[in-house]
Image 1 (cartoon, helix red, strand yellow):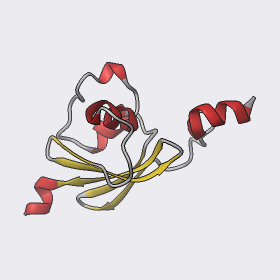
Image 2 (cartoon, helix red, strand yellow):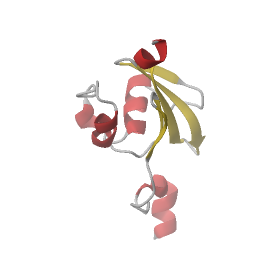
Image 3 (cartoon, helix red, strand yellow):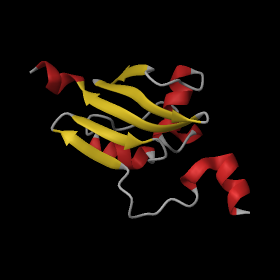
Image 4 (cartoon, one colour):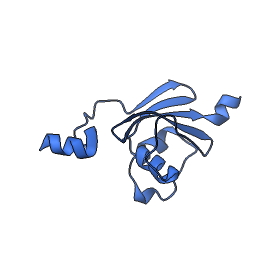
Length: 108
């Protein structure tokens, strides 16, 4: 059963809660796991109070798929609320990791 669920949903169901899903690279960029909830992302990215239509998805990967209207490929970028979201790893159509850069801090 675990293999079937893993194939359909990836590691989201069985992910160890001790794994870090948001890693701060420096003061203005983060490496975020695609399955990270939008609620957790909003805690780190303080200018974002609400994502568009956030009741239709739960994860950061879901947000990117919603905004880009497709399953994004590695290197796809989206600028939103002064942040750049860049997909750095995709595995079997599952967005694994996203690099988020604070564009407003980068300009200073």
